[in-house]
Length: 214
Image (tube, rainbow, N blue to C red; front, top):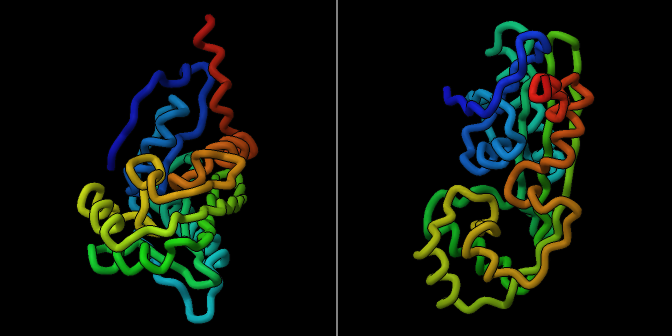
């Protein structure tokens, strides 16, 4: 378990603990932008898609399963975030490649194509029975990349733990012609606009810090 420790809420204004149900370093970095203390727990769920399951359904199901699995690990009042992202190429789900060969095959299939990245987030607060999900989809147009360009990119960035084999926040931006999104954090792996809204609905407002002005 890891902890991120920005300024903590005042004891006179208690808030539930915030727990990120993901070991992704990208989601951890995104959530840290909110400058609110949180813990990180591994959800330990099977992330394989079900037979016949559409990519959108996979993302929503896994985000919910992750939030529920981590909520069961937490004692006391905790607000848990679960999230999942699935790359969708013409209805075919593209997961994390895991190695160079699969990443190369993914990028070869995606060159010149529009790929939709479905990112789902689920916020659960077991103590109050709260559970809500949100889904954001980003349409990404890939350049018509040569095999040489794909090989160079993979050797330099090694994005083998990223759905779709490209890190838009790094050198992977050079692979793209266009990104259509209403939240730039969505493609990285955690849509912060939707997440902060769900946290607020669950009873955790990241801007509610009256102790800072006492």
